Length: 393
Image (cartoon, rainbow, N blue to C red):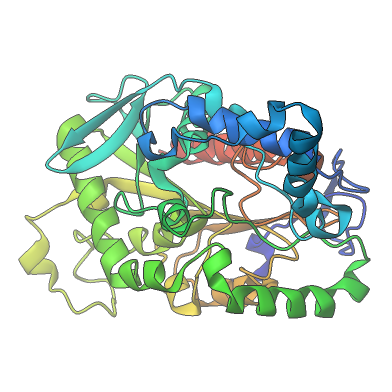
């Protein structure tokens, strides 16, 4: 893998690489905090979600907000304690403003595998398969993200649940936490000053993973081996239902990690080519599967990614990630790209001051004050990549 194939795009004013392309971002500067009233309004919006989340339909808290008199004022004051400037600065709240918007596609279940489809997928030439983040189908924003990819690319999209219908959000709610998990706050210091303190804060935050993105028990139930099995069987089922000519895989966050192994060399590889895989080409030549129809992949800010994951990549890959993201250190990306055996891989880094939170690319998960137009920028990167891949054919 040569460095000239690794293009970084920095959005923001603090790009420190002379060879990178500077793209103006509206997000630089100070991040606004979500006030207490807005945060509580978000809580009430959750009760109006469609039947994807029946267990969240009860939320008695709005009555306390509307109460009048001294007693209610005292209670409201107590309720607002966690929303003081000191505590609200602990993390940017997940905004969830778009959760009330109905998705445009349809959800289907075949052989116990649930997927969401938008667009005319049956017998299409090219199908985009999107792997969800750790919130799965319980986040309406994930369905709306699939809608946006369909609208941007003009191609049919199928969303599959990377969590196997067991999202981390469900674990958090079982523990009585009504707020979605979130990362530590973006830092306002320059990169040179904020790095160590941000890393230290992240490590102490991650150690208490019960209140972070991932719960220890949830992680045990979503090991690499279990999750890749879920993803592979889901893609196989989608292929059997829609029989597309080819597939482009796009993954976000937790699901993005599994884009990389899906880009392994086809089981129909040329037997005269050198290959370090154990499978015999003569045994699998007549056993083409859905993964053989995967043309290329896009990984958006993967989490839990290891260097070994990059060794699987033989097909074209677009790797989009946020700089200053301690869940995906830049060194891991740089070292990983050197291990990619394929010759067609690009990486694009999105930079902003303060740094973007993990999960910035799903519209609606964070307010525009925190992530700006970056989710839309990601859609445009995906669209440009997809069109370039189809032009090669």
